[in-house]
Image 1 (cartoon, one colour):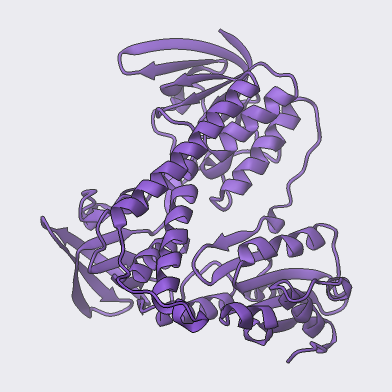
Image 2: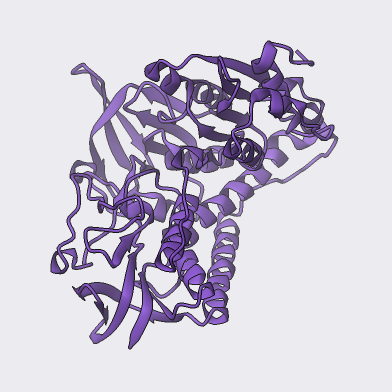
Length: 466
């Protein structure tokens, strides 16, 4: 069969690119290795983790917050099997939605491992069955998988990644999380809310190390209240596991000092790496860099002009929404358009509670680049809306150019900031100033008022409510 476009991989980047290509009149096919569409994000990543985060937050609030609101509960307990069943139902509904979108847009779906025969031909292997399809253009959207060093003894039972953590059906007494980044903190907070004793081991000297330092401090303060224990500046040398537990050997950075932590589970969350195994890149002369990423130009073309790559297999943050934008960009390039992505304005979010959201430059990056800037911060505890819901932790921080007042970065820790951050993204897309941001009328009482107040603080240190 011949197609205008073949997409290999059905995660957010892949399926969105397939839809946009179809909208532009291209005969499109999508190939997925697994039996369900949606990739890591929908099946074992973004969607199921958010379902468990939401469920665990409901329980935690019932146990610790409801009484403050005059709501008494008795006999409260966790039904972990039901929590996981609900998560699975959310995943199932979401994946079925992708099936519907493929049919709606007349996209042919093939199940199996896609690999290059030549630059226009892809072989699809599903068990013993094989078939070949050809495409004028081919898009690689195969995503990523967890990094698990051999010395960690990954057995999928006691030493696990996020994939297995999503299906734990009894609340563990003790869990060690290796890695203080987004995935480790999100899943660690799920179990901490449910009553698990959680230790986080992070090699860097702060959690969420790629985000603004103030965000790191604010989030760590909140997670400590949740009972999470942190070993910053520590690494893990080995992990050994038995039938019912595992032992994590921790080493303080720069020393020979080690100690052991015994736990029910060890969650390895030190990052992800591009997944290109079995693609047959060597058959078309496409090489990867030292981190396994496929090299692309500004049109996201590989070294082979009709083959493109998007999402986690190329440079940049491994974010579903980044992959989506890249998938749309490639579709429009193929159809002769001239789209553009400003990678500086792709927001990052951590779905703990409080949430963390960030866009643009961090204060550390501005200092390193020698940029003259001014900063304004506003705490959520000063907002009436935050006091009403008892969401008092966190702040909004606005960084603006010292001379032009253009907003250079916005960083938030607080309630619903995953949704609030889009205000900053939109304004920065149009190169707004902190003054512009401060002059917009924000509804009262809302969490978004913290953005206005932080902008006022950055403009001329004139926040109204502190």
